[in-house]
Length: 536
Image: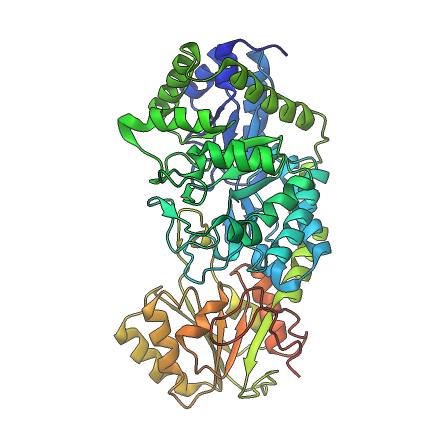
């Protein structure tokens, strides 16, 4: 399909909108100009699989009626704590859980099953997997989205997931290039600088992306991080860096697919009146698709600015057309892929796979008190204390989840009481809970990011001074142990989702072994790969 310049510029835009149906002005724009596709977000667009399928069908029908190529329809369906679509999709435990399982086979099966579910709903691009190597315990935005801190393992599992997704007919996206795993701040809130030299980048951050490219990944998503080793003269986000995109990604690593930016409304990218300049800089650097938010003024400003830049040769016409051809080639590949029936979503087979991953990932790090496996008498009382989940970053959907650990334990032992505390419990709340646990035979306390949340750390440390035995569980990152290092019994689940809560309950009670191993090290305490592989 031969495109005009106007159509080719339109193919560079990944748009979004607010609503479970596309607004009239969005459909009007679709009828009058090309654009690459849309990104659907949980809080704006999705309720359940059937609604998503109706929405994607409507969008594709509107594009066809306007004489346009099919749209890219993308989501962030990573599993774990970032799921763009719920309401019946399978709760896959996420990348760090796969890292704890060490299973390439499970990573492939997860990608394939996840891809089948997305394809059934009419979603053809998944912004997954994260190929970031989570080497910084203070990283606030990657964390459980990574497969771990070993570059070789991240590469192996990332490749497996890429292959699984694309075998199911959904384009995978390796992100966040050139590697967001060693950062202590979040690009949603400002520019992040990764100060490593090229040797370190090629040793740690780059290998998972190189492996994904060799495996045929269709998209690579850029990070809004600055790497002075490649742009020594200015602090340019990778999204705006020709040396990283045209030099490293295209020329050195040989990537010939579609380069998509991370969300362009992040604070690391200039906002306001100067946004068009950064959009132009991104396109000139080599970005094929700009990931835009639902602001229609921003969308139209980006389109008009890019088009005028192309007309004035600030963007080389040949580059504009080559970029559009890459997007069209991806659309052609996607158009040839079959779409499964909707009943594949949340199928028994997929739920069993999620359970298998969960059972293979639950990790017992320490049991100095020899509490496990728990063998409670029929009258024994167990207390479960968990924080109320919140979204730790904009790239998080934890707030939609309730931690069902107590419910899972009750399936095996009825005398379980649950106490849900604030994400940052107060001193009064901590004191009251410490008094309450004297009535129980054992306490299981879960934490979410306790290494950075002083209230949760204070809660566990206070409980440890009581007479009642305590089992501490990190429900997200294993680093929580550093906040309460005297905990004698400590386990990790890597997510809050029901399959992992049930697997934890079964492991605590001795019905299954603890089979996982740490996918990251706990600095000063335990190395990567550590794990007590059975509680008995």
